[in-house]
Length: 193
Image (cartoon, rainbow, N blue to C red; front, side, top):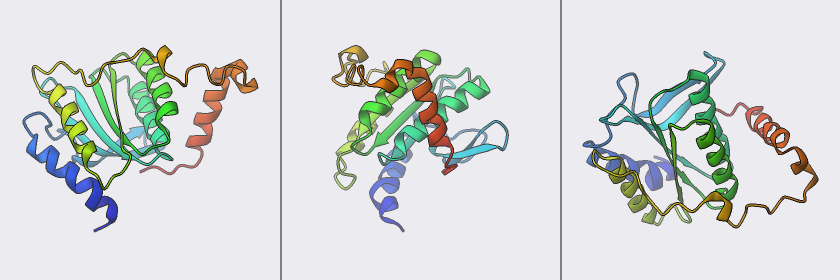
C-alpha cells in the first residue's frame, strides 16, 4: 500500500463508509476511480471518489497536489459543460498548499458558467495531520438532507487578496485568451487520472 493510500485514501474511505446515510454509490459505476468521459472516448479520466445524494445530486471528492489541482478542476468543468449535466454537482477538492488562489479564480469562473456546480475547497497543509478530515466531514454534513450547504462564510471573490494583483501585466490585456492558453497547456499533457 502506498503512502498516498495510507495518508489520504484510507481515511477518506473510512469517513465515506461511515457517512453512507448521505453519500450513496453511483448507480452506473464504482465509488473509487469512477470513469468520466469528455467527448466520447477521446478524453477519459477517473474521479477519485464519486457518490450520489438522496436528491439525485452528484458528489465528487478529489485529493490533489498543487500541480494537479487546476487540471482536475478544469476537467470537471469541461465534463459538466460537454454533457450538459442538469444535476447539482458538488466537487469537494482537497488540495495541497500553493494552488489556492488560481484554483479559486477558476472555480468562480466555473460557477458563473454552470450554476449547478458547487465547489468546496479544503486546503491541506500536511496530509499526515488529519485536520482536513474534519473539514471534509463538515462538507458532507452540509450535503445531508436538511443540510444548508453552507461550509464557511463566503467572502466575495472581489475581496480576496489576489484579485487585481496581475492587472498591470501585459498578458492580462486579453485575460480570456490567457486562460484559454493555460487550459490548452494543461490539457496537452494528457495525464488523465
